[in-house]
Image 1: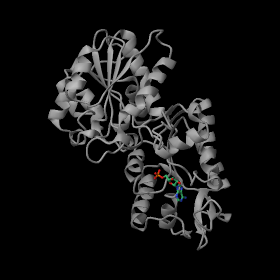
Image 2: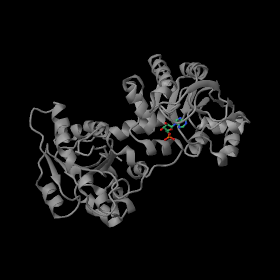
Image 3: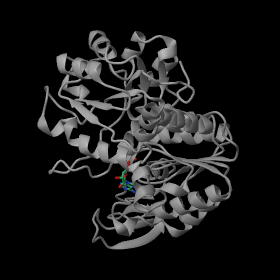
Image 4: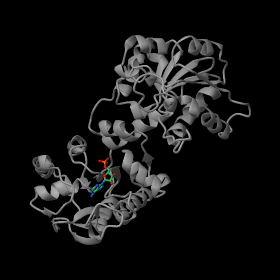
Amino acid sequence: MSEFAAYNFKGQKALVRVDFNVPLNDKFEITDDTRMRAAIPTIKKILADGGIVILMSHFGRPKDGPEEKYSLKHLVRHLYDLLMAEKFSKENIPVLFANDCIGEQAYLTASMMRPGEVLLLENLRFHKEEEKGDEKFAEKLSKLGDVWVNDAFGTAHRAHASTAVIAKFFPADKKMFGLLMESEVASAEKVLHKAEKPFVAIIGGAKVSDKILIIENLLERATDIIIGGGMAYTFMKAKGGQIGNSLCEEERLDTALEILKKAEEKKVCIHLPSDSIIADKFATDAETSVAPSNHIPDGWMGLDIGANACDQFSNVIKNSKTILWNGPMGVFEMPKFQHGTKTIAIAIAEATQDGAFSLVGGGDSVAAVNQFGFTDKVSYVSTGGGAMLEYFEGKILPGIAAVNS
Ligand code: AMP
């Protein structure tokens, strides 16, 4: 594996796996370009060295071959605008597009490119071989570049042709992480293996079942684990509490008890919300009230953490040196139930300002920090939902292992 920053791309064709899986509206307009922006520094460095950039990505979930709505051609204009807006070059940066990621046109275009040019290949998933991790398909892709750069952290947990299998067609000094991938891995490593204590992990969201593995891995590392959101009620019920109509996974009650027992053995402090904002229905116009989280009346459900829980959790966060946040504290999509999640975001921002390292990852907590305007007030916001979760579960991600091999 080569070090990206130290590598000189002059005259080299860099085949860069990016994650351009951005949301589009029905007019094919990009509604959130975060993932595209995240790849710009990598592209910029290759161009600045005098290299050629060939970008490949998946886009949506096409079922059976090419589909207009999943064509990456809808992204070309915006990619050009982002590159030109960066003003790192006075010259025009041509952004070309190939109608297929392999085949005649792609090879011909790639072969005629000059330093300073960018080519975006059509959606990799128009070929079913991509997700199957087909070796022949990976080999065909590999022919497009001299160097393979993996900058798609969002798909690093998939052993697909372009994210992992392709690695075997490049020698060790011609494969590397891009800048985004490097910073994702460095931030995750800092939390997983080099955390300064106290280390608090804040885990929220709807389901215990989705978060069991991450909690178990964190029991080996964290000082404190805060559990909020819908999943807290399974823990409350397991402990004998009355949770009314709150979310509960009956088949996970034993798991919850086991987690609590292991935490006690390992001297990890688990914090559950002492009180909740309760509602008489799951709706924006619901009647609301406050109740202890283990005394929720029948017909009512906990949809956010209460004021005491906000204080309780904020104190733990403010005393921590390392903070990991995955999952909201309540139904933050509805204004009535977003106070808990917002309070946690504020506490993390304050702790960060006081010197803590904070990493936010996982779809909904990232959406929450963006929504509340806290993106620049935490140390790092991960771009990879599923990948980040698997990393914190202690799994080896194929997209990372492939580069290191
Ligand atoms: P997850 O994808 O598991 O991280 O869950 C995120 C979802 O959990 C969000 O859509 C939240 O609205 C939802 N959620 C958070 N707290 C609760 C709760 N107390 N009851 C029901 N849903 C919740």
